[in-house]
Amino acid sequence: IYYRLDHHWTSLGAYYGYAALMDAMGLAAAPLDSYQRTTVSTDFNGTTFSTSGVRWMKPDSIDIYVPEEGISLSALGAYLVAEKNGIL
Image 1: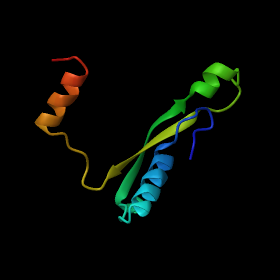
Image 2: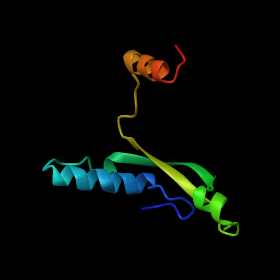
Image 3: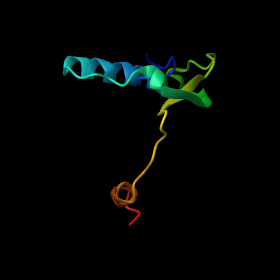
Protein backbone atom coordinates (compact mmCIF):
# COMPACT_ATOMS: atom_id res chain seq x y z
CA ILE A 1 0.00 0.00 0.00
CA TYR A 2 3.09 2.20 0.07
CA TYR A 3 5.48 3.00 -2.74
CA ARG A 4 8.76 1.11 -2.48
CA LEU A 5 10.73 4.35 -2.84
CA ASP A 6 8.49 6.77 -0.95
CA HIS A 7 6.72 7.09 2.40
CA HIS A 8 3.29 7.95 0.95
CA TRP A 9 0.39 5.62 0.27
CA THR A 10 -0.14 4.52 -3.28
CA SER A 11 -3.53 5.33 -4.80
CA LEU A 12 -4.56 1.76 -3.99
CA GLY A 13 -3.39 2.26 -0.40
CA ALA A 14 -5.49 5.43 -0.22
CA TYR A 15 -8.50 3.46 -1.45
CA TYR A 16 -7.97 0.88 1.31
CA GLY A 17 -7.81 3.71 3.86
CA TYR A 18 -11.01 5.21 2.46
CA ALA A 19 -12.76 1.82 2.55
CA ALA A 20 -11.69 1.22 6.17
CA LEU A 21 -12.89 4.69 7.20
CA MET A 22 -16.25 4.20 5.49
CA ASP A 23 -16.61 0.82 7.21
CA ALA A 24 -15.77 2.35 10.60
CA MET A 25 -18.45 5.00 10.00
CA GLY A 26 -20.99 2.33 9.06
CA LEU A 27 -21.11 3.49 5.43
CA ALA A 28 -20.57 1.57 2.22
CA ALA A 29 -17.48 2.38 0.18
CA ALA A 30 -17.70 2.46 -3.60
CA PRO A 31 -16.36 -0.90 -4.80
CA LEU A 32 -12.85 -0.84 -6.23
CA ASP A 33 -14.08 -2.44 -9.44
CA SER A 34 -16.22 0.65 -10.11
CA TYR A 35 -12.98 2.52 -10.89
CA GLN A 36 -10.78 2.31 -13.97
CA ARG A 37 -7.09 1.95 -13.06
CA THR A 38 -4.75 3.98 -15.26
CA THR A 39 -0.97 4.11 -14.99
CA VAL A 40 0.15 7.73 -15.25
CA SER A 41 3.87 7.28 -14.57
CA THR A 42 6.36 4.43 -14.63
CA ASP A 43 9.36 6.37 -13.36
CA PHE A 44 8.47 7.68 -9.90
CA ASN A 45 11.44 8.00 -7.55
CA GLY A 46 10.16 9.15 -4.18
CA THR A 47 11.81 10.66 -1.14
CA THR A 48 13.36 7.36 -0.04
CA PHE A 49 15.20 7.29 -3.37
CA SER A 50 16.31 10.91 -3.16
CA THR A 51 17.39 10.95 0.50
CA SER A 52 18.79 7.48 1.20
CA GLY A 53 21.21 6.86 -1.63
CA VAL A 54 19.16 3.84 -2.74
CA ARG A 55 19.76 4.42 -6.43
CA TRP A 56 19.75 0.84 -7.73
CA MET A 57 16.04 0.10 -7.30
CA LYS A 58 13.63 0.23 -10.23
CA PRO A 59 11.30 3.30 -10.10
CA ASP A 60 7.73 2.88 -8.90
CA SER A 61 4.66 3.25 -11.10
CA ILE A 62 1.86 5.64 -10.22
CA ASP A 63 -1.69 4.46 -10.89
CA ILE A 64 -4.84 6.51 -10.54
CA TYR A 65 -8.36 5.19 -10.13
CA VAL A 66 -11.02 7.06 -12.07
CA PRO A 67 -14.75 6.45 -11.46
CA GLU A 68 -16.63 4.84 -14.35
CA GLU A 69 -18.58 8.07 -14.86
CA GLY A 70 -15.34 10.04 -15.11
CA ILE A 71 -14.30 13.17 -13.30
CA SER A 72 -15.78 16.60 -13.80
CA LEU A 73 -14.91 19.97 -12.41
CA SER A 74 -17.53 22.60 -11.91
CA ALA A 75 -16.94 26.24 -12.72
CA LEU A 76 -17.19 27.06 -9.00
CA GLY A 77 -14.72 24.29 -8.18
CA ALA A 78 -12.28 25.57 -10.78
CA TYR A 79 -12.64 29.11 -9.42
CA LEU A 80 -11.98 27.99 -5.84
CA VAL A 81 -8.91 26.01 -6.86
CA ALA A 82 -7.57 28.96 -8.86
CA GLU A 83 -8.26 31.37 -6.01
CA LYS A 84 -6.56 29.09 -3.49
CA ASN A 85 -3.48 28.88 -5.70
CA GLY A 86 -3.26 32.64 -6.14
CA ILE A 87 -4.15 32.56 -9.83
CA LEU A 88 -7.06 34.99 -9.43
